[in-house]
Length: 215
Image (tube, helix red, strand yellow):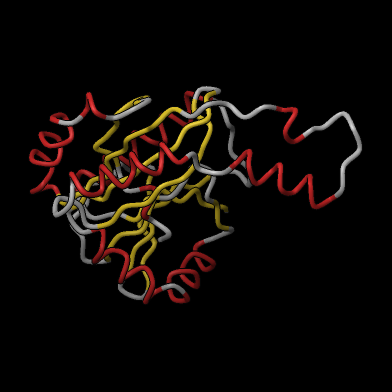
């Protein structure tokens, strides 16, 4: 029987789970899992429900959250996975302890298809250079990221950034791992400079620390 993974926690964590969930323990860790078919549906409602379950676990204890669709074959495979990754997972749980993820999404100008799909034949080098330009982080976005790092300094534990597509729009997502005790101050300081953030798309969170699960 396959299992859909929701997250990894410390074995000693206090956690109230639904009867349909299973805690599979090994190497002082526990995987929060649920029996499933070999493949899972990608229906939006099911993905949303999965996220809500992960949030519920995150609100109870420190969690390394999994992305929807993380499936392992059986209990023994999960135990071996926990044993093989014990040091990494335990170190990550220390880093994520009592933290929330906050996000700042900057809107980017869409790149032109003509940059990456030229009508005239071009060399491989020219094509690769065009692709690099298309996916390069704009200088303005980098400046905004540095500005926010400075403004929010001392209020977050880690940060990361990535270009992604959100609702059909190319964006630059800045993610911050924030201790819960710093969350009010983080929000207050972020709100104080929000009008200075160029091309702000949205501010999101607090969330389970998805973008720091594999750092």
